[in-house]
Length: 325
Length: 128
Image (cartoon, rainbow over all chains, first blue to last red; front, top):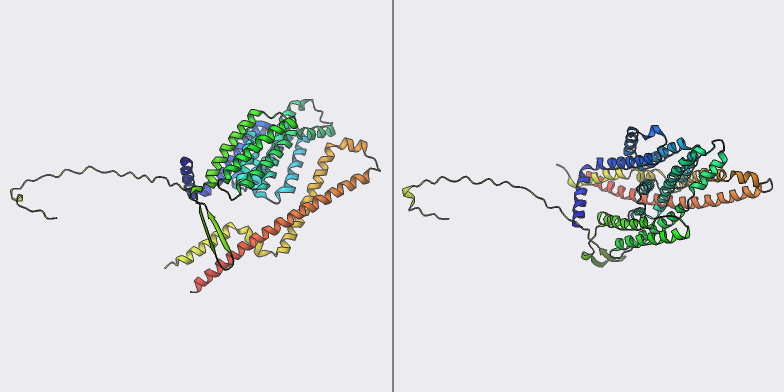
């Protein structure tokens, strides 16, 4: 743990000196990785698949706010889906517009959770998201997380649809729309959304309690809730989420939650101070919990030159000299 | 010679103005009633457009059934169902918008009050 704290202090110092560059670089990396994964999964439009185009789009995301990343990622997805099927692209575009009109009006800042959820789902570690969202954000993160899951399942459906698209008659538009809408509405979406929503609420409520080690309890409770909900839901909804995947997700979410606890909420409960005092209007009962702080050893290397040997000159008359100090 | 207190206060105000530009704009350029009402109006418009798109999505998925099974006599029931759902949706979102933007304005107003206090202190320091 000391290692992580030292790393945190070094990062804080580095961030303090270079904050102008770190945020755009982080946005660039997030956008680049997400776009690369989207291209790898549903890259049906050749002109958008190139590395050069991806880099240009990521650079645009780096300089614009977080909302622009979500917008660009969704537009790229719609473009790829348009190359596959007009109906799928129209349905996807309608879903995005509905998401924007009903939700992002209120809290555009949490739109980054849409991209993070999509990224974690594509990297096969979606179970990290509810614990992280509950720790770092609020209850309303449920909605962008839900949108991220829906976008991921649209992508999944597009991959399956691509395999049967050859046999689909383009003129049978009504049937195609119906097939697309029925195909997107997977039972796994409902299970994941319910499980993640409950996990985020539980993690958020517990970590805000004024008890010692609230974050640790929140992480454990959240991970267990997610695990139980997914196992039970797997049986009830007859979905096929792998047990091994759920178990690995549980372990990973606890590890990530612990790291987030140290980075964002490193407090030392053993040195808690409790004081009480009053003024004319109120009595104050104050609990102060100091943050962990570890300063890196400031190592300075001093080179000590070997002393030059004095030449000893022997003089006969020095025998009688008294040295007074 | 530099007045350290003055420099610290001015730096604090400058950082504040840079980071809280939006909040300062909200609270200093609008009355609460105007701000909340305007955003409730925007919410009503976006909710209406969003609801129309939802209905369109539903219609695309069930167009065949709607065309085959619905008759002229069933139309009023269908339309009244859609309208009543719209009204419920609108009321819910307008309520959320009212509380959300009221809270946002109150938070911004508190920040502006703090900034004005700092500006008053700075004026006093300059006059000394």
